[in-house]
Image 1 (cartoon, helix red, strand yellow):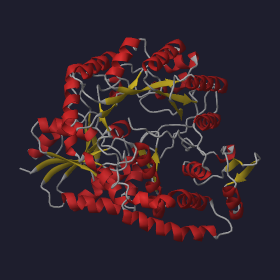
Image 2: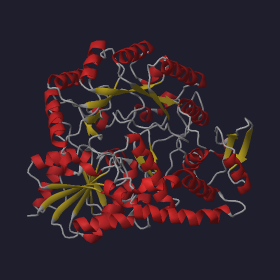
Image 3: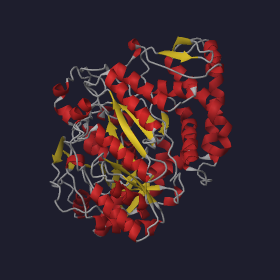
Image 4: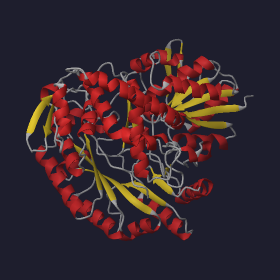
Length: 636
């Protein structure tokens, strides 16, 4: 008998301001089944260690030594230019606030927006000595992006990264050694919800196997379920004993039972993968149960007072359902169980869980994380909140729908709704039909008017470059977005470039959407989103240019160095890039990336507004969006 049945670990890199919901849900379920469960948020502990006053001081010393080395050179190669720009940005923008950064986790009385900004600065500074590795905090999503020479969508790269030094290995080794070296533990579960967690997760597995080879290590989470149902690098099973697909609660329950009985020759458990006689064995997940109640998240498994945002202003995550009740959008993963297998618990059950969490944590801000919450369930919960005078605020993702009547939206507002996020994607009727959105311009406008009338702010998400979309259609949609913002119907708008994802209707039948000549990189065996292809409508290059143009017009970045840094970090190192800069005298000059250092300093001294495009010859097929909407999150 072990003192601890399972240690559930959240590896870097994910949100710095709150715990992910996956581990609290698993912990709540397993504890109900009688298992001894503990949690370890390595993501949060790593940020505390990396962004400590001592470490930031050392990083500052590195920058002061490294910048003159680059600055004194007559010219720089592309990778050196990337490093130079990032160091210049640190000196100009981050250094003046060093004392504030040193107290990032000690002084948490700031507004949320200020904490996020300081975290962004601190992450950039702490990552400087590890170039080309870096950490980029994306303010519009709240997630941390980890950039490294190894590709997160390649099982070969994941394996090879295990034997390479990284910015996180030393700290993770210390933290894991402190926790598990003497702990009587049966199993460790690593939860990988986001792409940027997969490299550190498998590094954790290797470290744990080195410290405690007797512990069974299993890996699961949404990234694993979507991208690792099949992969080629079997040697990853040298460091993990099993992989769990889809919902992990029941599979983990069965796995722990098998391990307790020492049945380690193989596992006849639905939704599990393991290696046997050098072959990967996959037991298909069981069909979802018709009757389903989401386990109440056990947030007590993590110390909520140790995150970036003070717990009284933290927005805890809470799910009202699993899957999506619409599940028809052509661009979404509607053929995967995480979307198509919609399950909706009873509203009273959900409200009781929410009320219990409020009482147990004292937290009064919640983010309902459903892809699209059911309007009737949300209304029932809102009425209960008001009836019980439960003092909470919440934000939610919804579909544009006639079901969102004025009275229903009023119930939401009176029940604590503070913001609604809608997936709009386009204003063009033809494109909306092709997307299978099931909405019309009239519905959208009516719904936005009702939200404005009730006083609920709205953010909409837009897509540029959907297959067959023309530039004229994209510009017409953007024109309507600007008009709606001017009328006060939209508070924020987030633009993204179209990507083709696996398990979607488009990926199943790309020719139906005129897609051909897909760039499927053979070494990326974990089904990454595909951005490079040919189709009717705009070219990929033009779609990216338009996306960036719309982002710039919606929010003025106004900082040349920040712009340059993001531009270069999101493009590969093997192609020339030209940057078109509008100087303060309104003249425009196109400058190649490897230009004279004296010219760089001249431009830095005369910067005003910025407009930039990659030259077509320098566009790399694997690039992601050049920039993202940088929307600060306001505390509710």
